[in-house]
Amino acid sequence: MASAPDDARFMAAAIRLSLWNLGRTSTNPSVGCLIVKDGVIVGRGVTAPGGRPHAEPQALADAGEHARGATAYVTLEPCSHHGKTPPCANALIAAGVARVVVSVTDPDTRVSGRGLRMLEEAGISVTTGVLEEEGRRALAGYLTRQTKARPQVILKLAVSTDGMIGRQGAGQVAITGPVARGQVQVLRSQTDAILVGIGTALADDPLLNVRLEGLEAYSPIRIVLDRRLELLLDSKLVSSASTVPVIVVGDGQPRPGYADRKASLQAKGVEVLEVDRPEALLSALADRGISSVLVEGGARVAAEWLSADLVDEIHLYEGSGTVGEGGIPSPVTPGTVPPGFRKIRSAVLGGDRLCVFERDGP
Ligand code: AOF
Ligand code: ZN
Image (cartoon, rainbow, N blue to C red; front, side, top):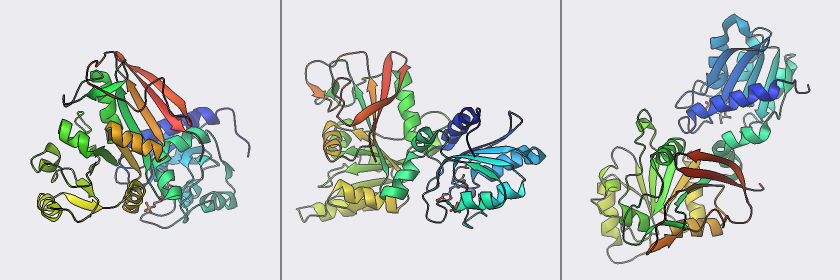
């Protein structure tokens, strides 16, 4: 069936709702579902933290008897499989929903069109592809892992007005203010993993967790690209490994002291993963159900991953001050966004600005 005039409006609301649990439902996607009767929202559901229950049964329970004859707006095709929960398509049928509007079909091989067919065979009118571009963005981590067997990669950079991300030898330099820093904490809480190079880990001794009140439980796992295993045993990352997991990515090459450093890191609860290329790391992470990786530093890792074409989104925070003498140039500035990326969003964050760019194409 064709779209009704209000479909885009309600789907936009369902997509916003889905973002509520983004980063908390892995390996499941965070899906939003609204039940609408006579133009009024009578039920809301979003995939629960941990991935279950799914969105639809929660929205149906919220709607109760009002679900009969109503329209369900779902950001992802309702599931058709008996997994850890019964199929959502059956729940929608049993509740007597008259119409189901979907943004994105589910590439999971257990579903992929079957959910839609089950609904249609039960006489429910089905519309798909509503706000598909926005729906895909909200599900990007899940869709990337399902279709490319790697997580979505988001590169975050904070640049000064003179195009710098920091100053040589100065440790952490404040480029942006508290509002933008709070936004970065939200972004961290929405991703499954956060990654830095050993240069950043040694220079800044970062903790890379989520400290925003109410979101502390949603710190992503922390990954350090550290070929020779140089991460210090008394660094904040290693010291907190028992609270939030740390993976150090070494190259496994025989070099003096490597095996000892590996054993010492492991004894502190750090996992040492040995791969030779970023592509192999991403595939190993996808195998563990990691759907998104936030690359937070530094300039070298950013440049390498950009030139290897591994970055899906760039989040460019533009501060209002300068760094000046000794500055570390950013591989991306507002005037030098790599070709193939287009701006999809911008926001003013206190005295700073955020621009989000998405890679064009598949
Ligand atoms: C939905 N609604 O809210 C979500 C769905 O392991 P299970 O049984 O939970 O199934 C996981 C799959 O369910 C996942 O790969 C995706 O296909 C779908 N996720 N489906 O109908 C939801 N989160
Ligand atoms: Zn389901």
